[in-house]
Image (tube, rainbow over all chains, first blue to last red; front, side, top):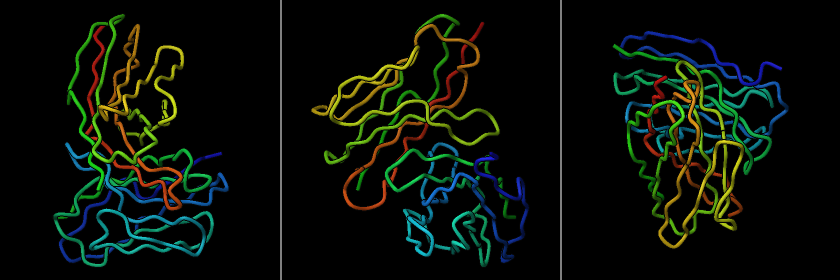
Length: 112
Length: 115
């Protein structure tokens, strides 16, 4: 099992550009999550999907959209990137909502 | 909402010494407290967790203690080894509340174990 995979690993965008971060898990998990990690601030939840077909906002959803494409895949889209979105983005999954979360390796995004 | 504070932000110990990281939380309804280890360039990995119905949990060299009255919990690593060097995050949530297990993370502690 690959676990949770994320693409790309690194990305540089100019202000105003758009992009989609991809996440996939092969553990047959129902719940998936997107976090951002900024220096000195731990991880903050952007969006989550409790199960296929549902998505909900987390702590910091502004400027992002998500799509739960199927049970395996959960994508995060930045429609108009801003320098404040420079961060490391982690995707995670869990069997169900109240279970251990498994994290992917992260995507380091820089917006200039 | 919940707020989690973590101390210290950096910790340096000699190999074989013990390391202790402390977290405090604000929401008295929080009942699930996991600890994650993040190695350089990798995602966080759960190393131990505790629920509010117990006061202490051990797993080999790692232990977590919980004081619900004072609203704080701690990670204890004994006989530290260089491979314990990483960033450690605590988190808190209200598991079992009928909704998502929304984890609120502390800011992290960078642990360095020197040979």
